[in-house]
Length: 310
Image 1: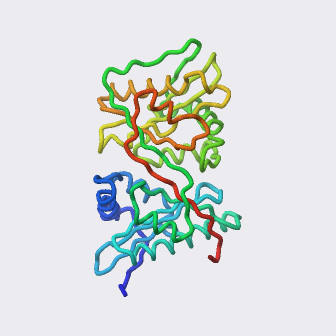
Image 2 (image 1 turned 45 degrees about the horizontal axis):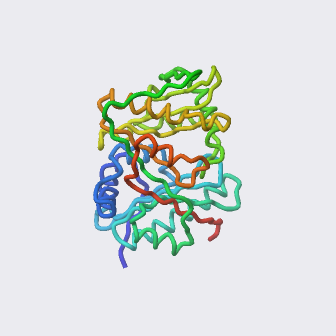
Image 3 (image 1 turned 180 degrees about the vertical axis):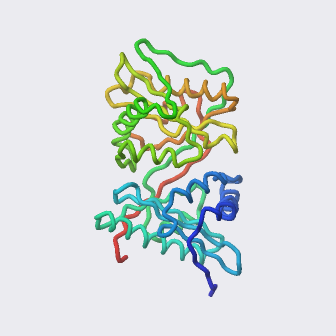
């Protein structure tokens, strides 16, 4: 039986946590997926005094895990990364117990717990299944490689860009996002202040990559790009693409993607990446394939309902 040391992480642990996560990524996918900035951002976003743990033995980091509630909802995201089974089992118990507590603290009698797993990660899928999780949806990572991108134009459609401090554009884009995503998997409404705080907590955020499309002056669609894949793949990233229901089917998604692709090419980026839910209420996967994107990775979301006192 291993003697484990459990403690709360601090932001300064980002380097050793990244080494742990990169080791797992390489084993499963053949290459690191999370960057050091991704880990540092995640640690900054978490309530480290309550919602995250490091497991060590003989001075070596064996595992990292966390639980994070989505707003005031019953939805809780967890993650477990470990170098050996005992540490993994301990972190699963800690994360699921905290998920139930987080839901209870928000006034819910259960937690809807999601964990994201690589499609080929057999060990983690088996661990999730043993704990009552089942596949809920799949996100495809799509990539387009750029060579002479031509922006799309549509009659009556104008596009304006965001900028730091341009609150009017940000507020309008937020309204479009909330309406466009209302029926999507895992969506939890957020106020403008909550939404901007979440975006700005990431070191990859850049409001200059926000695009807002208007049809004859009416806000209709928005796209928010970030720098999440610049350091490791020299690619832009479409974090969010939303079209209000009444404006779907007019080509606004293709228009905004073409503008984002062209902007990324001007910045010297070799491509653009995004994630799409395969069970999206809109035919998004087909849209992305139609603009030359191809799937490069599949991440499955597994879900379980957990109640306090489990």
